Each structure stands twice: as structure tokens, then as C-alpha cells.
Image (tube, rainbow, N blue to C red):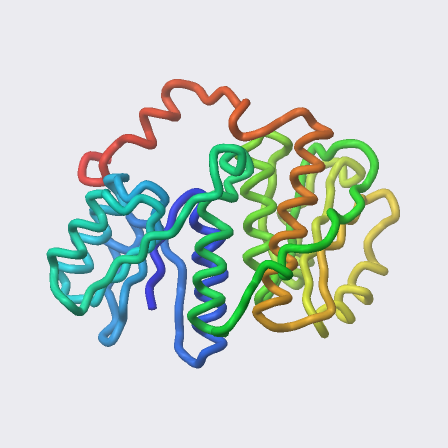
Length: 280
């Protein structure tokens, strides 16, 4: 399964891909331009995640998949959208799913699409429910002060959590952030010039925590470490870890006084977002 996502839906896409792999089939997350430019392996289905169902890049990815004869499914939070109409009219082997949003207050932390899409993925691969108890728990205590640089580390089902935390740091303007994993980080190249100003955000589940314990004994004491972890290994634990990570970031954003909806993006950045792929 090729999962096409961009922006806030990328976290849900990464989690969805991990669930699909656990079910025994390969999956990967790709951005629209990369999806269009690469060959599509035989037997691949496309899953396109979109909040509005209107962005031209995702519409272009859907047209490319359908033209290539790839079964295409879309998940949106807007039933009356061009993406839904495109897939609906393309044939019975394609499908669209419309999810509710969490309201305007959730948009500043980009929860309005991430959580509903993640819950849908859990329903598909794990079945049953309810899933509300997965989102219980308190934020994890933050290190003192504010970071000048953030490195998030994670593998397996914890990798989407690392991706989400780093993305939120960048989009809110809290700090520059990079995503890595433990072994790759050991090769260097992502640490700030002054390590004492860097936060290591370590995301781990289940038995990976044991390796994390040994790994962190080598980290100097002047490097701030934030551990986002859970003892479980399954889908429910992954949802819980993602939720607690989001709450923890919200506490960091409050401390920094920075939120995505308060950030002032330059006008040229908005123009880039609206630039169609075929003219880029």
C-alpha cells in the first residue's frame, strides 16, 4: 500500500503504514510529488489522506493512481470535496471514507485530522473498540527551559510519534527539529553545535525501552532528555503514546507561547503551498 499524505496527515499515514505492515503486507508513506514520479509496483493499492479533499497536489496524486489503474481509496474530513467526487466516479474498486473533525480548537495542534484518521486505522487493523481509553493519561514532564534544537528518536510503532513531535516543533516555531533513530543518531550530523541547548525526545515502546536505557547512559548529563514511552507493544499502546505525546507538546507550546495558529508565515511560503505540481 502506498499511503499518500502531506502536512498534518503524514503522522496518521505513518501510523497507518505500520499497522498495515503488522498485518503482513508492505506499506510506505510518500508525498504527492514523490508518488507521481516513482514507478508503482504491481499489486499496489493507493491510500490518500486529506483533510479538505481539495488540495491540488493530492488531487494530482489521485488522478495519477487512477490513470495507472491502481485501486485508490481516500480518507477525508470533507464529504463534499473534489477528491471524494473524483474517486466516486472512477469505479467500484475505489472508495472514499469521510471522518468527522474534532472542531476548530483542535486545529491549532493539528489534532482534527490526525486523531480521527488514526482511530479509523485502528478499527481496520485491530477491530472492536471503543478506543477512548487509549487517549487517557497525563502529559509527560518536560525538561527545564526551552530547546534551541530538538532531535526526536523512534523506531517501529513509536516512529510516527517521533515524526509528529518534530513536525509540531517546526510548524509552531518552538524549535528546529530533526527525526532520527538511535543507531542513525549515533553516526552524528543532527546534533546542535551546543549540545546543552538540544533536547533529545526519545519515543519507545515495549522491549525497545531496554535498549533505550542502555543508550541513554552514554548521553552527557547536560543534554536534556524527554522520554515518551509505554510498556505495551500493540495498536492500543501506539495510540496512547501518540496522544500523550500530543499533550506533552501542547504543554511545551504553552511554555514557549508558540502555536501553529499564531505563527506568522511569510507570504511567499503560502504561495509555495498553492503552487501546482505541474508548474513547480
